[in-house]
Image (tube, rainbow, N blue to C red; front, side, top):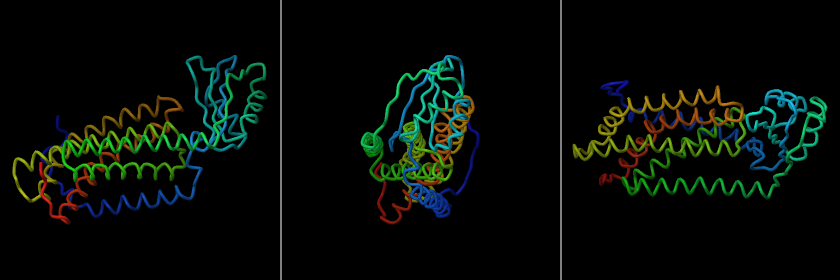
Amino acid sequence: MELIKNTRIDFIGKRKWVYLFSLVIIVIGMTVFGLRGKANFGIDFVGGDIVQTRFNTSSSVAAVRNEIRNLNIPEVTVQEVGTEHNEFIIKSPPDTSGKILATLEARFGKENIQVLAKSVISPSMSVTLRKRALTAFFAGLLGILLYLTIRFEFHFAVCATIAIFHDLLIVIAILALSNKIIDGTIIAALLTIAGYSVNDTIVIFDRIRENVRKTRSKNYLELFNLSINETLSRTILTVLTVIFVDIMLFIFGGEPLKNFAYTLLFGFFFGAYSSIFIASAILIDWQRKSAFRFRL
């Protein structure tokens, strides 16, 4: 199935404007990210309190959150556990769990609330979590780099990896601009985005390799544009499909999945955007500057 046929769009010719667009978003977003500092991160990475409670009667995440909101405590997350609608995990900044429990007991009745578990994530544990998250992230990127080097060649692998960094920086910038908190769920979303982005890039790179082998032409600018146009329909269909599913997840997935789905929404879009405009553009600029020939 082809959504768009026989396009002749000069994607590579527009690369300077695309570079500028991406740079503006990343610079503005990273500036806001730097100014926010620790406020960018949830308690998984900066420390805080975790309380698991069970109510004698059914309630909702919205009802619990509304009571906590009156305390004006920032960065509180409420997650429902199970299917009985009466058990919740509440994550909050350090030394706030007592105040939260007191408020809930006053509203719902102390006899109606049971504390199942109460723990504290210390700053030292948060440092360990951050290190593990970064280790997992860079290990994944290294694996992608090695795989693409073996499947294609080193130049392709490097450009695909740069495109992944581009996508993640833009998504993090958008999260900072929209005051979203980065926690374990967001890290999972970022790793998902990295996998999606490189998959889309591989499809275009594979068509580039096929066209270079078939024509043996050195007019790489024309070949790259041809390859992107030939895979454009597939790219658009793929991104529309995953975005539709992601929107359903955002609407019906419940509060705990909203930030996850929100992150994926921008990640899927910019993953397709970088596959079309960024990865191939960087590769062609590198080739024109270094004058190497593709050994495919």
